[in-house]
Structures are given as structure tokens and as C-alpha cells.
Image 1 (cartoon, rainbow, N blue to C red):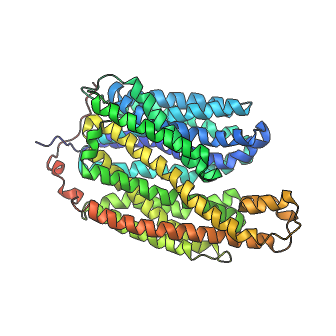
Image 2 (tube, rainbow, N blue to C red; image 1 turned 90 degrees about the vertical axis):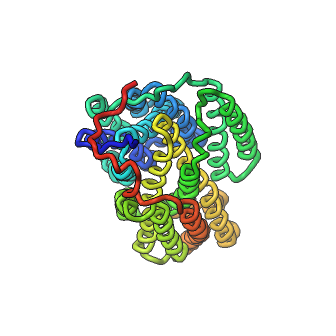
Length: 517
């Protein structure tokens, strides 16, 4: 007999509470891009330290997601959430008042570990509270929307804070969010602990970190410096540790990651779609941002404002796709959204440097439409396919593949765009140009912008055209990949049925709260 229950007002209020730390994580992603120049001026980090200020957070959050997702299943998802949001706020204060680059790097790394507790905990708790398939799908759409809303608001909020306060003020937003979460979650969010969680296997934790961190490092290093020896060595080390991790999980009674989850074809297909879908978005987001700032000449705040319409399309998709999936099979909804996303990539592939901003925003808006759909429905398919006591682990896997997809997108599409730019701009630099001017121009459009006042006439325009050709090449490649992904979605998810036909909808009682363990 079905065990699904209809959620009541308390659960929807609890969803609003869970959306706060989720939005905070999205906000944190885009806030720091605006704060970085002020940080550099104040703390004077070296080039390597500046990279670690930005990357430490992403490395650690990706590395600890699987561990924290499983830990939440075993010690209690609400308990881990409250512990994590407290730590996130405390470390954010330390980051805000950092007086040196190493201190800020350490704070960013600690923020990554704390942040890794929030994403799988909030998502798994949504699955716990909303067991009715139709309600769960919509609730996960709201969850995905809150993260997207945080990312969209980041540039606007960051610009407003930096206009009146110092760069560290951006970190302090975590404090009121933590205060509200700590006050409201115990009243509105039920606790859940897996009935037979077992002990946390520390060697598995070590192997998961030894696998994930080098792989993330490899793709990031390849994106910034090309596929050299450090990237290849890190990739090989990470792969070897991943093999050892899988072997150990197969021999454990209580594994850190239950590999039987992959036996469900819906679970595996949805993870693959999330991974591949985020590759395109991750690579193109950076290129579109550069187009707005360096080709169109917009300030960071103005560029952030122009990103609002695509973000709105993502929000519409995150809410609309679960509603559409009530009548249409989710696989068809995902495939159709990805096909529209491919149209957006094609529009970006046809852009010219002289075109206005509107075609750029419309094309990227369609890309974000596909992202909102796979973020909502893809995540719902992953969580819905997992048993309740493995929801934390499933949620962590969902977040891990998305983090990896973004990193791979930057590495592959970003490197392709950079190669096209350098090939086209190399011959345009006049002979005899001083190296301190020629080298930044040949490196990137951002470099050309930094020495724009010293460039020969017309060279910056040629650099802008070269960067646009790089965007064209990357988005055309992404369009082909997303079209293939749309076909894969239609085939691999063809067995999914509309949410209104889910057997769990036969139950119509009101949800009273999850077991507290």
C-alpha cells in the first residue's frame, strides 16, 4: 500500500525555510565575482592566492557533498542542516573580516565544507516532507528556483553592497539567513534519520575526497592552463582513487555510497542528463558574462541586470515544468525543453560583435529555460527514484554531478573559445607592440580590456570580434551536444509516466511529519 501523504500548510512553510539557505548558496556563487577586484586591492594576494580565493569554495563543496549527504541520512538531516548553517554563518563572519589572503582562503575552504551540508540536507528534507509525487515535483521546482533566484540576485545585491560598504559585507548576508533558519526549522521542518544507517566509514570518506578533489582540480587547471602534466596527473590520481572507492563500497555492509542506486535506469539517466546539461551552461555562462562586460561595455551591475530576464525564464521553467509533467511524461518535457535550449545556443552561435544586447539575452534565456527544466525535473527524478533512507545520498550525487558538469563546461567550452580567440587575434597584433601590451591582448579579451588605452587603433575591436567568434564556436558545439541530449532524454526516459498517474497519488491523507529516528 502507498505510504505517500498530502503535505499541508506546515510543510509548505517548511519549504520556504529550506529555500533560504538554498538561495544563500546561489547568492554566494555570483556575489564574489563583483567583490573580487576590491578584495585584491585590499588584501594584495598573489596570482595563485587569488585563484584559490575563488576556487577553494568550489573544490571543498564538491569534495564533501557525497560524505555530507550520507552523514545526514545517518545523524539526522535537520540536525546536519542546522549545524551546517550555523558553521556557514560563523565562517562567513571570519571571511568578511579577513586581514590576509591565506586567512580568506582558509575561510573559503571552510565555507565549502559547511556549504556541502546545506544542499543535500535541504533537498533530502524536501523529499522527506513531500512524499506525494505531484507535490514533491512542484516542491523541488521551488527548491531549484530558490537557488536560481539567489544566483540571479547576486550581481544586483553585490553591486548595492559594494556601493555603500566594504567587500566583506557580501559575506555577512549569511548571518540573518542562518538566524531565521535556526529559529524556524525546528518548528516547521521534521527530522529524519535512516532507520539502519550504520557507521560512517572513514576510509571511504578519504577515498571519496581523494577521487573528487583531484578530478575537479584537473578540469579547472585544464581550463586555465591547458591539459598539461599537472592536470593529467591529477586526473589519473583521481580516477585511480575512484576505482578504489567503488571497490570498497561493494564490499561494505553500510557503504558511504550505495551503488545499487545506479541499478535504477531512471536514476542513472537523470544523473547523466544533469551532468551533460550543466556542461553547456557552465561553459557558456562565463562567455556570456564576458560578452556583456567587455564586448558590450556594461558595468558589472548593468550586466547583472541584463541577466535578470534569462533568470526569470529559468524560474518559469523550474515551476512550469513540474506542472507540465503532471499531464505529459517527464522525459518528453525534458526533451522538449532541451530542444528549446539548443535553439538558444544556435542564436548565440550566430551572434556578431556588432549586434545589440537583446539577441544575446534572448539566446541565453532559452539556454536557461532548459537549465530550469532539468534542474527541477532531473533532480526530482533522481530523488524520487531513491528509497527514503537513501535520499540524502541521492541528493548529494545530484549536486555532485552538477558541480562537475559546470567545471567540465568551463574546461571544455571555455578552452575552445579561448583557442579560437587566440588564433584570430594573434595575427592582428602589430609587430613591435611592447610585450606588456601584446601579451595581455593575445591571452584574453579581459587582458585586452586591461590595456585598452594603450592599444593601436582598431585592435580592441578586433579582439572583441575574436572573442565573439570564440563564443560562436563554443555555443555551436553546445547546440549539437544539447540536441543529442534531448534525443537521449526522450529515449532513456521514455518509460516515465505523467506525475498525475503516479501510484502514490492514490493516498489522500495529510502529511503529519517524518520519523525523527
